[in-house]
Amino acid sequence: MLEDIESFKMAKSIVIIDSYYNLSNSSIPIVLYNAKKHFPALDIRLNNTAIDNIEANISSNISDIALSFKEPEDNSLMYTKLMDDTLVLVGPSNFNGPDSITALDINNYPLILLQDQFNIKRRLHLAQEDYRDPLALNIIFTVNTIDVAKSSVLKGYGLSIMPRVCIMDDLIKGTLKEITLQNISLDYSIYLIYTP
Image (cartoon, rainbow, N blue to C red; front, side, top):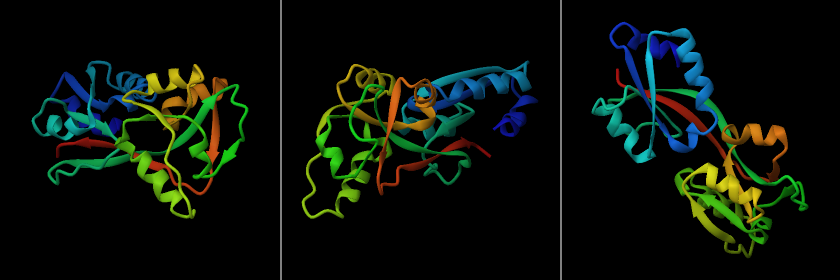
């Protein structure tokens, strides 16, 4: 990413970065800090942006670069993969259920889901097709930010599936407990999007 910012260094004094708000929670501060360290003269600004607006903002020069978990659909935009991550099922630290559950077992637990930009419901339903009698997911409510999902889990309202990179500190500190989901792929990538 720093190499891509380098191309803006000579022509601009301000670099505006769009980031899908759920990716901005905990992963972006280190990126911004390192960018500022390498390019101290740049005024680096972050906009939390809905995923559906990121490409339009780049194309219309509202922002210079963007972080997204989707490759751009607009063929005129360039992108590079920054990293791979995975969505993880988490409960509060005092969760006394099993450390590992199947796609069918998840129906037995209340869920707080993120708005389905990551296609979580679809992935769970596809994993349940291996079972004869898949059940409906026990979704308590759906939220649009990781902070609300995390707070709900910590209050004991249910389990949630969130990007590992966004909750890594909570997993390390032990405030959230990861519960392995057996035989379900919840991997995704994070991309840097920019104009050529």
